[in-house]
Amino acid sequence: MRIGHRAQRRLRGLLSVVVLGIAFSASATAQIFDQYSGEETYFRFCASCHGEDGHGDGPVSAGLRITVPDLTSLRKRQGDEFPDTLLRRIIDGRDIVIYHGTRYMPVWGYEFWVQEGADEAAQASVDIIIGNLVDYIESIQR
Image (cartoon, rainbow, N blue to C red):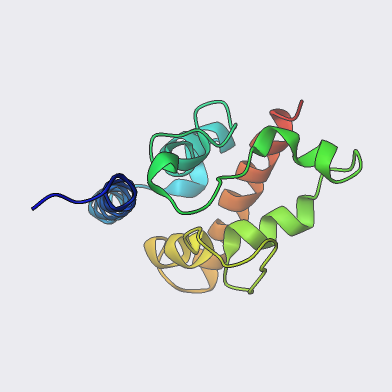
């Protein structure tokens, strides 16, 4: 059976997300993510969609139904002010922030919280992980 180009792209994107989820689940129990630098966290969890340089051109992006945001121009798009608080909320994902349409990004706050132990100490770790990641994204602004 032959499927169309559009269906192939969607299937590749879906399979990529599933593979990333499996890889995250399989390896996460052995990791302590709050000890990762923001750059390490970015390359482990974000670069597959947002690309190595943050331009929205990661290998998974071609299979998604949306345009993946260019993270290097956040400051420019916000009137030369880096949207630190908004970005933290978007990455965390547990507080619904629909910035442009439907949420396609994983709910990283919950994922990290579960992997860190799903308790009060885990929440402190999530804050560190997301803070490190936001700091890294701020460092790649053009």
